[in-house]
Length: 171
Image (cartoon, rainbow, N blue to C red; front, side, top):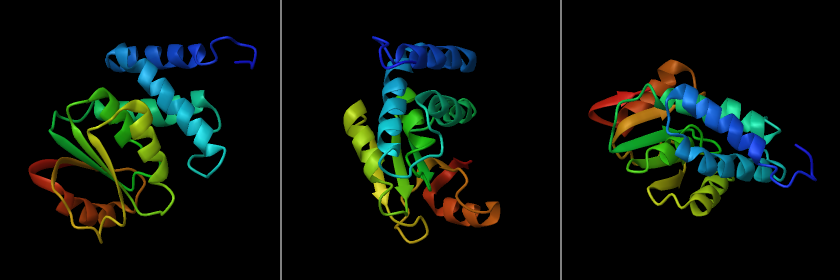
């Protein structure tokens, strides 16, 4: 991708379309997911949100990894992502599951600003960013509770359980 490229996100959309097809996720979501990658790339230049330095790396390591997880999850009316950081895996899941209410919980003070900007940019009305520590906030049970690299498994499980509804799934 070069600055003179008239469609700098064409390579990114192609990468996403190929990855979505491989995961059996409708490729109609590629443009929104590309916008998410570009937005995160733009924000990451100003604040430390990810170690991935290109939109393509963000697509491969954050977006497509999140969607590989999504493909393993059952349908649910709601999902909570504890320790969501910049909104992963919750934001990509929200894009491909527009009917699912997604809550992003993040304790680091500046981190929820990016997901809020992404929600506005992508028109994701079914997503909320909740600042605070998962164990300190009043838990609202969801059909699925996920945590990725939040804490050691035993501690993460203790924090996840109050957030999952009876009969729900913890991942």
